[in-house]
Length: 194
Length: 269
Ligand SMILES: C[S@@+](CC[C@H](N)C(=O)[O-])C[C@H]1O[C@@H](n2cnc3c(N)ncnc32)[C@H](O)[C@@H]1O
Image 1 (cartoon, each protein chain N blue to C red):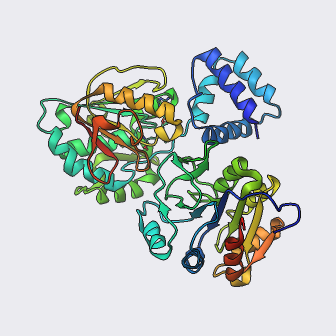
Image 2: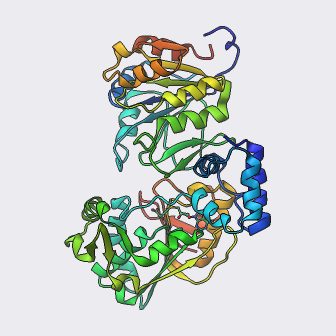
Image 3: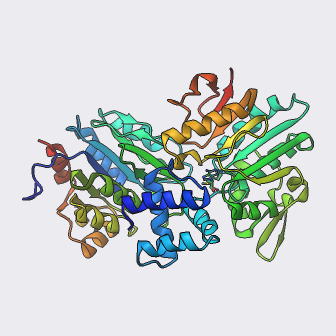
């Protein structure tokens, strides 16, 4: 990890993505056996009203426990949490997740910006935010805020993204700490807190 | 962005001056909303917002309006309404009179959806829908039963997924981009301002709907609101929450039995 950012234990890794991200996750997750004392939160743009399809799909692909996210679900290390459709995902000081049905942001609910920004406020230097493939500008502003709050920002290498718009937009507007392809992201996440 | 301390100061002032108590609200959402208010009203300094609150009594109405989240729709989560249609209404049908409370009804879309279900089950004539909210402005909209016409396509799809068999457009008259729902529905509704934080029980109900309101409360306040619902429900009455809300871990949990996967509980004690 980057100089100066070392020695801070990561509490939360949050992955945001849109079109083309699910494929990335389906490659990453089967190779993750455990999470080294951090919680993994996944915020994907997903169809409104879609029930548990995404959760069930991801459950099939990983040995890491995937927790159902209800309002005020506690975030615990070692678990995966997936933002439900039709709600923004927010982070509370007491390490619970809140849900919010306020207006869409970047045409999206959940919005990646909203989740990144809220996580940055609570987790500051102990947050890692990763932005994957997508066709939307969501996530860029959030990454900027994560970075400003001392967290580590990672963007999927556009060439490795099925839909590069989202990573390209991030790289054009802020300086991510890392730009990584899928294998490198896997290595990066595996090495967190080691 | 306002700081955590500024937010606490604002919460205190709003309570001292106007009696609205937001101290039990989830901070993550509340902070976003106050930041938004800050932007909408173009404040540069926190002190400007504070002096506005202190010196302009009318401002608090606007503050409550903007700080609460009023986003709603008709037949939101259509499969929830399908369960109400197929499993709850047939039970309520056996009662001589049906009382329903929509707590946090916002602009009323949820209440009109319920009225349509009741009408189709032939129960509307013996039902009364109490619709309450903390926000007086949304209640004024709700009373009118007039919603944007452009939303009707989506509502009509939701309605069909909920098991509706009629032509949805029969329920409203379209005019100048607005859809006005029939007075037959409004006639069965009672609207009034009610704050779940500070106001008590005001009747006994067979069904209480409080959807997507508790998500804005912290655990403590959620528990208090759930106790209020418990005290306001008839024996074997139903409590319906939003799809991501739960009574699990609350003090009323063992007085209720969950129906199925939907967030509906029956009061069994
Ligand atoms: C997101 S809307 C939910 C509308 C509708 N029930 C639905 O699910 O679509 C939340 C509503 O709760 C209301 N609310 C917030 N705090 C409240 C309180 N303390 N007492 C009563 N209503 C409140 C807000 O004004 C808002 O209209």
